Length: 169
Image: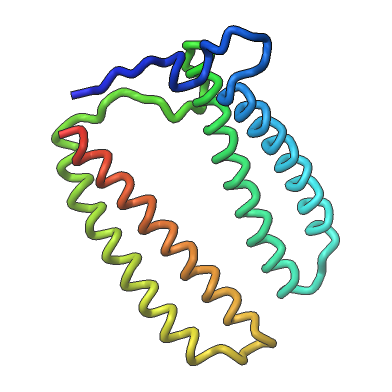
């Protein structure tokens, strides 16, 4: 069962003065950050175009890929918050309808498998980390630590999906 809350209270809209609400300030900050991410991405691309060292190019491409994902995440957050404030559903919003129950059951099963796969990967990365700490001036250590953090993030995201599905049933 869905809970309905006072939208004005949630977004601090009923202040009665000309000062922007907390949600409006957050939207402004997110929009500014999205713009900054765009500028950063362009700078990374410009620098990457001139790089010839394969290791430096590879690492810089990893950073650029992450920055592009960050910008997509921020854009979705902006769209969602903007939609909530304007009572619209702009493209890219994270708001959506309920998934079908049958699909959710299957998703829960594979989500649990994915969580276990990610956790197993973390354990394997940690073993590899011990064996490769000094390889290539520490590059392998940095790459493996990065993958461990990504897998930990994946577990957190997958657990969120599982909790959302279980809450909807």
